[in-house]
Image: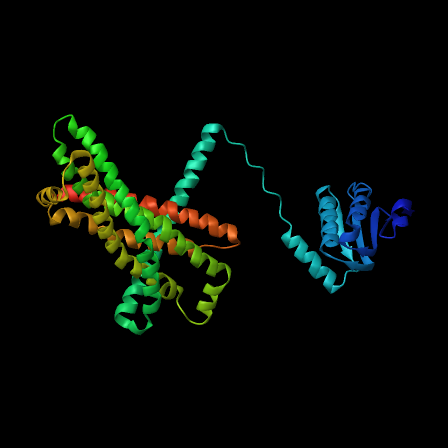
Length: 383
């Protein structure tokens, strides 16, 4: 029989050898506060050499998850070296704790092999592609959910439609946005007329600057610039408002009260923007033509009455229709993207900022994609 003096002196662990067996007697408190000492004592245990290890719990005072894991690790290491480990004197609570630790013990995942530069580039490209595809699916799914809620409110439960909220949103996204939309459109009309005069002067066709301004503003630039401004102004506002409500758990409170956040928060914003964006597009067209008319008067001496007569001859109702028909589609896209990003906010205020940025970028990108699709469609059908 042999005792380990250093171990016994610790008051936590002692080893006794008897007839080819090694008995480890656990004593005191096997808790996280003594983890460093316990790990050193267990590391000083005699070599297995095919012997049986008897781990005695009868004298232990307290043990927590860290102590149980140290025991489990020692037993597992002993068995891997060709010996046998047996636990004796353990109470029911000790056995439950040891069982939970053994169940949770998993081998560490193998270290990932470092990819080469080309493989890493392909890996990033693949991950971004999957992310974009999943994001597109979320957007389509949320669009379907929004359209379903709109039809439900329109035909099944019209009394649940929030008219006051819709009017408030209409003022915020429409009337309050008129100054910035009007200013930008006016300046764009001035720029188009000024640049057009320089180019058309080489052919002696300065009078056609009216056609250039009219077609550019009415077909493309009026509605496109308006949608981009609204995506940056109102789309980001939707995300920030709903994101803040998500952080304050107001959205969860709505669900608890039996209210659908899509009906309460999303539908009023979508409807308000669908109504106001065509109005803003008309206002932008007027301001753009006004800027072009002013610049034509200043640079070419074309008086306003001549400009208006030329304008009437240069454009038809189709020219205006091509521009304004895009407005409801742009409005739905901007509102749905802004609300979806707001509902995905989680964690902290940093998430609000990140989602707001994504809302603006995605909204503007999708507006430009839709505008390109409409341009191709109208060119195909000859409008």
